[in-house]
Amino acid sequence: AQSVTQLDSQVPVFEEAPVELRCNYSSSVSVYLFWYVQYPNQGLQLLLKYLSGSTLVKGINGFEAEFNKSQTSFHLRKPSVHISDTAEYFCAADLNEKLTFGTGTRLTIIP
Amino acid sequence: DGGITQSPKYLFRKEGQNVTLSCEQNLNHDAMYWYRQDPGQGLRLIYYSQIVNDFQKGDIAEGYSVSREKKESFPLTVTSAQKNPTAFYLCASRGRDRWPDTQYFGPGTRLTVL
Image 1 (cartoon, helix red, strand yellow):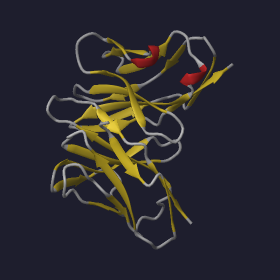
Image 2 (tube, chains in turn red, green):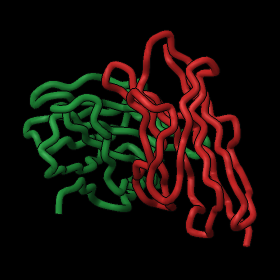
Image 3 (cartoon, chains in turn orange, cyan):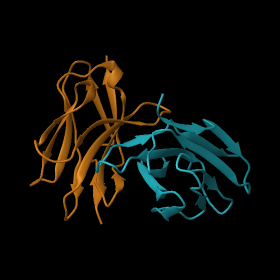
């Protein structure tokens, strides 16, 4: 069975500092990988996705992620965060038309 | 505007009552999903449907039921058999024409059992 691990449940970062949110997956077959963002009391919004091709994927709001097959990782990065980035971030893997989600990372931006 | 609507946004129920959560989409998507979200546990799949009149159990289907009589609608019933129904419920849909397509989410329904 595949699983998705987000090791950090909470990440505090100063405004304008860089951030990396970590995601590892376990699967014996190729998967498609996604990052979603959730603002309080709202649904999830897609940030970016990796399907194939270039391992560096760019998404909305200045976020990017790098697929690393040897380390089975798909870490999310942003070079300079803003207050508006405060939210919960979910990594997900698609296998057999179903998404498996990580437990989420709450990103808090410190002014 | 195309999208997914869920109603109501907040729902309160007494113990022992069944309650139905609505999910409608006008994206012409074939596949629809129901997730439950609890703090610190991420999203867990309750039921999903890949085509009208067909649906499959997800990881935590016990105490829930669904129907898929129309392409645009996928209501979820939380029955009295669900031991701990208080949670945030999210509906999603996905096209199947160009795979893998993105899964789009509705705004969610927060259910509280009193």
